[in-house]
Amino acid sequence: MKSLTLLFAELTRVSGLLALAVAVIFQICRAIESHSEMKRAKATWHTFQLQTRLGKLSTELQELEAGVSFASGLKFQAANLAYDRLLAEACERAGVNVEPQCEYEDVERLRRERALNQLGWVW
Image (cartoon, rainbow, N blue to C red; front, side, top):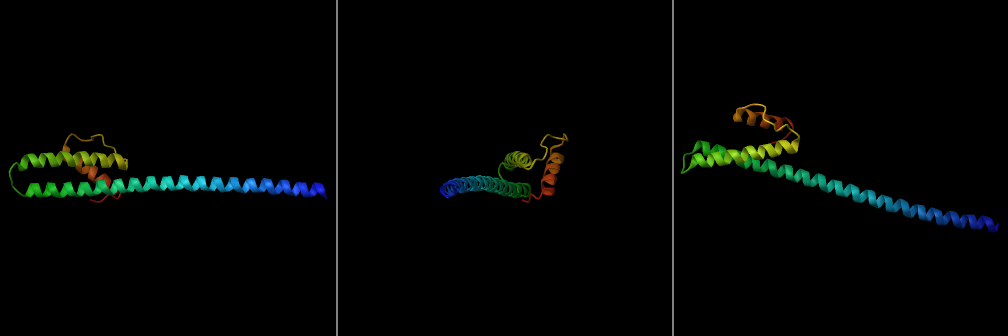
């Protein structure tokens, strides 16, 4: 009877340690999951910011094309360059090949825009 009581006490101690270990492992898993969720949220936010900036630059390019103002040619070139660089950044983020496949900038820009649109990017 005494050995049975000792055995029960030992099992209780071991099961208590096991329960504690399971609880710690569960907390670690939750922390890892929470961290990866934060990373995904950050990535989503960065993607949204890229899309917003692309939209603003696209609108600015259309306005510069339509109007004539002081140094509009230079402003258009600068906005165009900024748009192309931002488009390349968006392509890298989305996994689209950014290596030029065509020597014409306009065709390459359309290829990149279309590839991003097919992946669900909107701006």
